[in-house]
Amino acid sequence: MKNTHKFILACLCTFSVQISHADKVDDLMEVMHIKSQMIRGFDAMQPTIDMQVKQLSLNEAQTEELTRIYKEWFENDYEQEKVFEEAKNIYRKAFTDEELDDLITFYKMPIGEKFAITFPQIMQANTINSMKEGQRSQAILREKAKPFLEKLNKGSE
Image 1: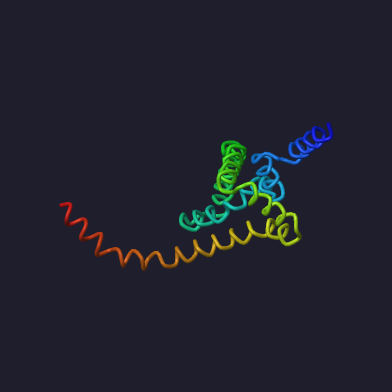
Image 2: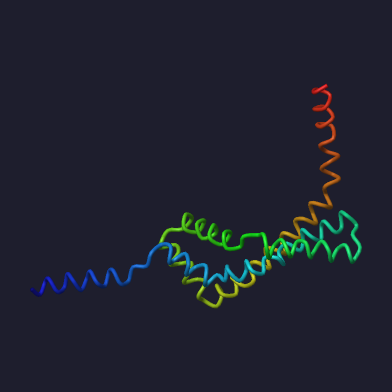
């Protein structure tokens, strides 16, 4: 009888402690503040809007209208919940239970909290810098590709 009680107690402890893989991903999304980052996702589009404004030489009124179009699209047509669920699926496939536990532990630490808050801003700044460099060096690329494209066009004639 004593062994039966130990077995039942061990089973209950095992079942009560186990958290599903999906629940761990949900926990990770929460400690990483992914949902709030996605809501602020419109701000991440600003470099794209700015690039179009510059390319199209828009005045202030036109810039405001283009921004309004993007904002309306983001709020009404862009399926944020679908993107959030797809992000969770990516994390489910990418990490084991143990790795999720480690990530959750990290993001609950002060440095993890800071990383969760600052990383999107860092990535946005890196994206802006990359786009600026791409714009700056685009003419050089065109010049380097010109002989190849001319040769390609001659071959198709």
